[in-house]
Length: 201
Image (cartoon, rainbow, N blue to C red; front, side):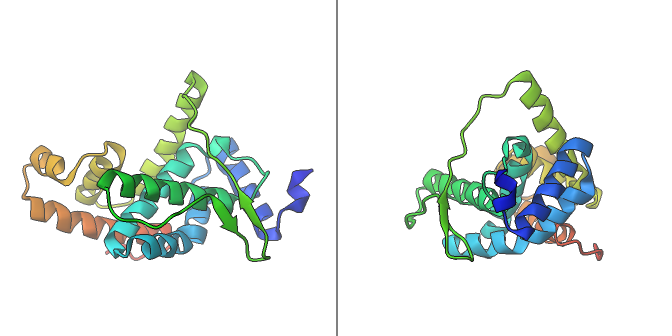
């Protein structure tokens, strides 16, 4: 089986993924986020040289990964798959913003010196996949609900409804500067949750 070729770390991830998919276990999602939040953040920060943007892209990457977690297979390590999603999301952002960027491909170099290349197909959602995607979003929402109501509302508008800062300002009738400041605070609090930290004040 392919699984026996995975490292011990990758096998542990696979068990968490199986529990997350079969039982919808929030603790398994939290464990995966706590494990990879910092490596994903630092990889993205190296690409965009902006801490706030790197945090935003990190949160988006986890959201996208959990939305399509059912498409993951053990042909390669979960970390490889997750980093590819994060890199692709970063590329999409940079292309949309037409910012100068360096070449980023899907070749992943592993700690043992080997490399691998994977593609993540943009699959059209079937009714079953739509239901699964909805369940993944629900898990992410349950994490966001740990935020205070005003912060939770901002995060939902920004990441689930994909509102711009200007649209959030108009929707909530608050100044644009306040939106940006509170979203910054929201991301800090959300990052504490992703890291498994309890201090939310």
